[in-house]
Length: 409
Ligand code: GLA
Image (cartoon, rainbow, N blue to C red; front, side):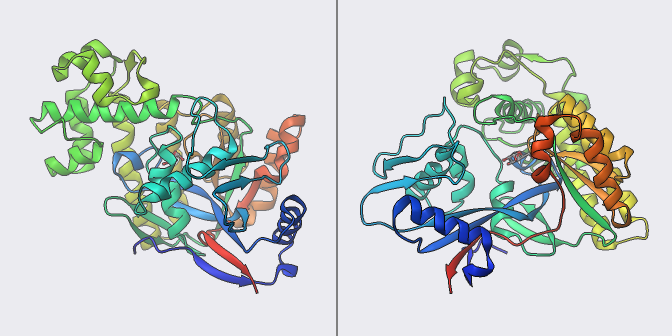
């Protein structure tokens, strides 16, 4: 299925308290009513972490929780942005001169990225747009936001973009828990360092197999060119790469290029001064995680009696690989995963980029209430800051619908 435009849904605002409140705030701020509203769902990745930008399929679902935007088209060339949360300041700029300050990430930059993206090219607009913020994202979030359907997670494959239903087993709920640690992907280089490590591993593996390494960008390209299985790729990683970190000098020597070439032709802007890269561990994570995604889908479609157990094991393996091989966890996420497993989750893992953010846990439905009570007590109760976030930060969710436009009926 291709990425369709979001659907338009007529709604009675009296039945939609959040939209009604948004309308009132809009009128109070701009003195006129919005013409339409846009919904973009949150998403949770069930499995397949840090492999979308390597070309591999991932398995997320959109959730019921969302962001709402009220819009009024205007005739001037000035775009005015305001946020219901007053700690995010109003912003306005001319559409003809969009400046995105990457050194100081601000909420309105994400909106400006969208505008800038539209001006460049419509196809693959969302994934490309995000890159203007400075991160080399893989497109999972944007794809699930547009391709989601209520009641089903999706296997998202890339190049070309495709989405296939993955029906989750009944009898288990998916619980999202916020670690209350924030990692600003755009303001730090953690994320891009990983993308570059995967790119460098791609180059070294390609070179060792006499492939045209200059053209190869993603770990999936190596597998596709060699025509081998993911398991065989894991063996090749063992043979070709070493676990000790690679210095830039060693990488340049392996590829026969200068440091200037490495910086200008391979590395991103915010990884120019990184001096060592772990290639073996990152490639091991990517190829094994890509295999786990396919296994997860297979179990969902075959639905054996012990499906929940098997899916839980895959989620746990994914988490261990993220923590040990990809090093994208943090002590708070580790603690939260431990707590979730201790109180009855069959599987629990960090979801999304990591280094903070949320965990997703699979919990048998009959244990859900006690699970939520116990996790609240163990992780949130004794910490004022966490407790304040807990209301929106610990909840069970179901696969929700995708992005859409609301118009007042
Ligand atoms: C972030 C990115 C996605 C993906 C995940 C990790 O959410 O936006 O593209 O790479 O991290 O799986």
